[in-house]
Length: 307
Image (tube, rainbow, N blue to C red):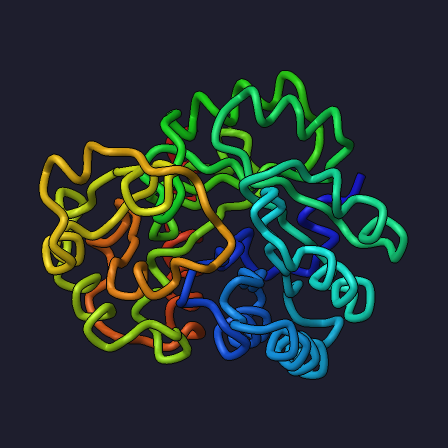
């Protein structure tokens, strides 16, 4: 089974796919900086636009860059999955990450061209099903993650999955600096899944007000609620308040729907993980990766000194 070392990554980091944030510019910048760059297919409004995005990314990213990654929702409400899979077959992203559904619908297509399939998992039950499906890796979404989040400690999650799975483990959940990367690797992960740190970047699709809200926020300003998409997710409290959500609203749970039909409703409700406190200004993706590498090396040296 392939490892992260075979993916030509400067740092063991994947810039995670983020709703309404990740686009071609961010993916290309991440790959050129030597990390993985991912985007959710839902960010392209139409199949035609997704076709253009994939073509742009594939043309820009070379084999010496970090891997570009497509993130597909495989839930039954995702009506254009078949069309998205045809584009996957055409453009052949090195990694496809499935979310909010079984990875099985993508396995045959991706495996046929030699790509890797990672499953986005939030608990051990999903991890076991993904392992049985034959995935190459798992994106383990732990407590503290932005967007659709898990509830397990990343340390407990990594340890439990290592008992049942020998593939690539990418762990996400509140990791926003090089020390956090080092901690995850020391705990048994192969790489980290980092999203929130990259929201306030020049390459981000996020609105300027969203970027400012992330910069101004701290971990206590993140709220977990299923009232927006039907699945527990981490949101910036300020954006929920501005959208008119009351405490009673946040305690409610609506039916799950990832068809994209509610995109207008989600437009001004913004997600973030508990790593928000690390972002202090708008930066380029390359600047952030440089900082992460410096911090990672310092953490590794500190660890070496302790043992």
